[in-house]
Length: 235
Image 1 (cartoon, rainbow, N blue to C red):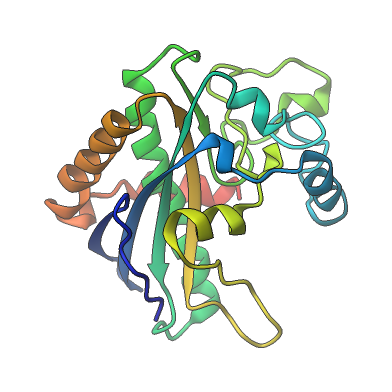
Image 2: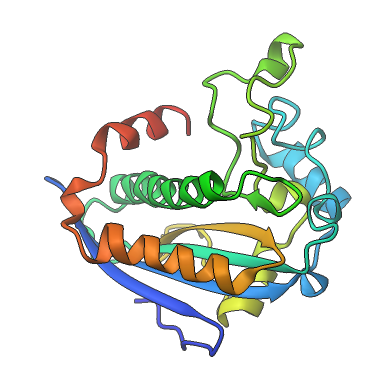
């Protein structure tokens, strides 16, 4: 099981999630870094995407169409990080459990980020870097040589801007990501997203309160199952 030490600038919330097939233990970690401490190398990670990701040059949110981290961090001093961790090491059908955990984690974080986005609509005040490629459209308009349908809602992932996410997690939370290895699954499934802002304390408080109110204090069976199904289609 993943163990981590709570750092002074870190918030941790824990809550359960149960479905007909699985019962998960979920942690939401919230931390903050100054943008000047974020390591990024756009060309390096764009090249990795080119040889290892099916979405390369197929989505506006992905390289080579995504912009570098310094574009989003301009005039923003902090990046607030949110990491959703779901322990999967105790699950019997590990592969299916990991896929389900991935869907659940993405859905949970997406709802939280949408909540913040609805409260801060000026892009000069706040920018979002989410997990994975944009999933607003089943087929990105780029593939038909058309403009992005939702440019104000389309957010690239951390890695699509050149960020070394493993380094970022280590700096913010004090541990490294686990990766798939031959015949060995990671102990947990996680998603990592970031919010660029000059008001990290305020955003962190609102994000913490959102998770507390919507997940910790409520029955997790209220998580929208239909949203999870839609997410799975777009993976």
